[in-house]
Image 1: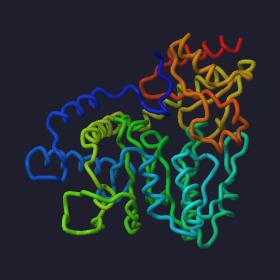
Image 2 (image 1 turned 90 degrees about the horizontal axis):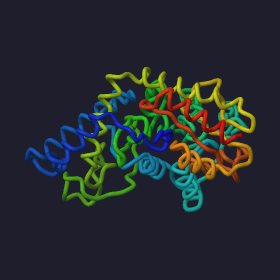
Image 3 (image 1 turned 120 degrees about the vertical axis):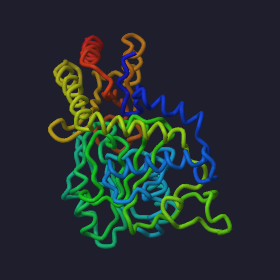
Length: 377
């Protein structure tokens, strides 16, 4: 199989990730639930991962990195924990349902007012329009760093400056960018960064988290066992315990920690250059094929994602043909990004997404180009 669905999850992981999970399964107890070797091994491994993530994202305090199962959980924690009844929130048409559905629920249940900055036919937004929609009293701006459909990256430093200039919080969905695009919470004015471990960070599924700026207090979305302050009737208020009720996925976090070592040693710039070269090679190979429509803006910063359609063929049919006939794995359909599909005019047809990763090759990319050309014929 030629795996070109890395925007959904990186199938191929560094060998050390697999070895770290296997070792943890045989040695790791429950973090903060004892003082024996197994529990302490878990605590040390998890704290080391916090330190590595804080360094990667320029989060000033490692204890302000809280772990979750994925970015969906992280976004729910941030959105539900910071936005209250009657608040005003600004977001964009590029968002994944992991942002949209929590916001829509708050709109229905808490009377939250939502403003969405529209995207054009290339999936771009106007920053001037965003600035007009963020008004004094706006509670938060919530947006993705990069679209999972087009690969277009937003200028989050500019958006963060707009948000903070109006006194609003800035919550960033880094599901598609963490591990491949530079992220600096300080210079990009990010109050809460939500990430997942299983995509470009190359860690196991079931890992993710959020980095929280000092001074930002998030109401816990879930409460329960923490291993500390047992006789308190409320969740301990200290980070990261306040956001980590229940047993953490220590085995997965051990794998994520190993993946972070791989990223640091290999270099995120090196990884991004490799992935960008493959995506550009593919884009240039398919964009001139008669009947092929490619979506997105390829002139600015982006991730290694290329989405397309072939004539009026259903995207699911094309993706199935790519898999069954050519052995190429892609993602068809709506990609949990309904507003952007409407903006692109692909609500009915969907799109076929090719997403490239560190372990893909030029030969695999050329095979995908040939397959698209043959299907288009």
